[in-house]
Length: 219
Ligand SMILES: Cc1cc2nc3c(=O)[nH]c(=O)nc-3n(C[C@H](O)[C@H](O)[C@H](O)COP(=O)(O)O)c2cc1C
Image (cartoon, rainbow, N blue to C red):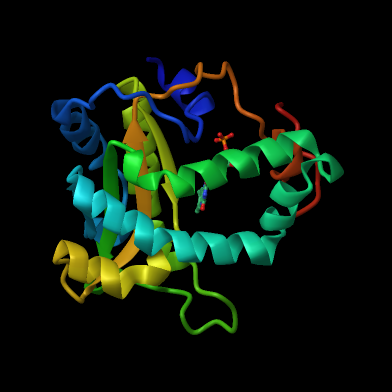
């Protein structure tokens, strides 16, 4: 696939067929993804590839309480209880996300993505706001994984609600204490047709010329 096409149509896939996933395709995707940038080229990302059914069920059990709490806090639970009162597209997304969570154990391949804390240069930790810079050394890799999986014809869904269960996940997968959980990526053969393009805001809504708020013309 062409890069532009992959970037524009790598959707979140939440429903998968029963077709087994070729381990070699996962390895190829990780092999391509490792060329991501990271602060000081420290490459602190670590990935545990989980296919064992018992471990997948354990990951689901760790994920679900956090997902359900998130649904309550964000109003997703209300949306599912009274779908007609909400925007149908949004309701459909929440329904799919909920099904994905409930059936997480059925997702064929789970990539548990962590990062070595000592490899992070967190340049904003002294600021009086939520720190985001640490993530900058692992999420470019995560996005590369998503794009490389799409290039392999595989669907994937990146979520972060396993992260609050970091201690239990470490125990389950023998992950050392100095590795922080960054994301979970569920992988399989997408059950739905691939979309032609994804729904995203146009450039003029988020990019500006010279000063914030100034329109950015193409030339
Ligand atoms: C940091 C992050 C957290 C996410 N968490 C969830 C999640 O908990 N559950 C879920 O189903 N999707 C999750 N997603 C996927 C987003 O919902 C998805 O990227 C967004 O709705 C756009 O979907 P599309 O790419 O299919 O258009 C997450 C994505 C990111 C980047």
